[in-house]
Image 1 (cartoon, rainbow, N blue to C red):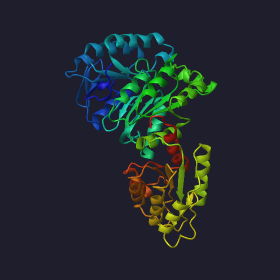
Image 2: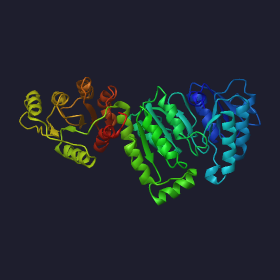
Image 3: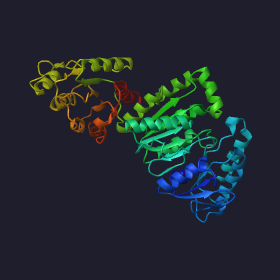
Image 4: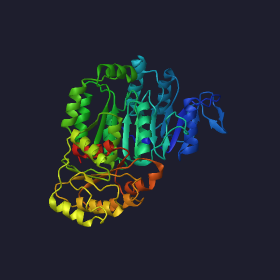
Length: 455
């Protein structure tokens, strides 16, 4: 099954637009595509007519152009005829936003769609989903454009059974500065499922990391997914719902999925090198780290800060995650101390964590980073920056990134995400160094590299 038209359309038809209700989901989708994206979009309503001076077509078959993608937002009962019309008209694929299928007990209606699509080799996402968000290219979500938080283009693909979870993650990704190659809400995943999308993103040049929010699999599907993920050369991050009895019940009513035995599935994922996230926060941190680095590590960490308290907190998180914060060798400590400014040479602690104290300036951070960039036994450096420290400038992120550009060590940073610190953060991000808004997030970035089998 070819997904090119589905995920890279040039022409889109929106079926279900209302001539009287501008707030109808189909109208929201149509207006966004018309006003915000570089695709040619056509409105469809059986009554025909005009909408904002544009012709409304009575069916997809009446559109005088080849259509790559059809977005369907009508009552469930009408969907089979629309899919039949799409197939007959040579449409490339569909995003079926409409609900009222298996999740509402109408398994027969959903199966009717699947049977038609398989017979015609016709690709569709859904039903009961938001569809597809492709940064700067197109967006089928029925959410008003002024309310949707849009991550910038990047190299992380996110696939989610839940549209709500996907949109929430997009907010977090945007806040953290993590870009997306594609975001796909698959809802009931009647036809296109996680395994199919694994194969697509494995071959997608835009995608470097593949992340999934999964509520459940069909019988034996989870094992097949894990085995296929283990064969890929790209990291796979998984957030699985239905870990408890209550969660399993909620999953079943949401997308008619079987949650299965979570404990067994979790163990299988670990064995096959899939990076399992316990919650949305871990998923974000793992994706950010893996979008920048794909290098395996055992977990030997050095920490740099200007605050002993921050260093202690980071050490605790490292220990809880099985990461090692070992004492630096004498040669490394001596080399760093010799490079420090005279004002802090006698007061800085270089044991690991390195505490440069609040009197440190940019050059002191560079000295510590340069020493760690060649230190034996260190694989990753966690940099805890407090940008309100008086000696730090906005150029520090770029300077420290430059130090590690030719090093085999990994650098991750913690900087509070406030607009006034944006230039400092960008100094890291523009040099492909991940920056977390929390100490725990920075440590999780290192943890992702320890757990990723294909890194």
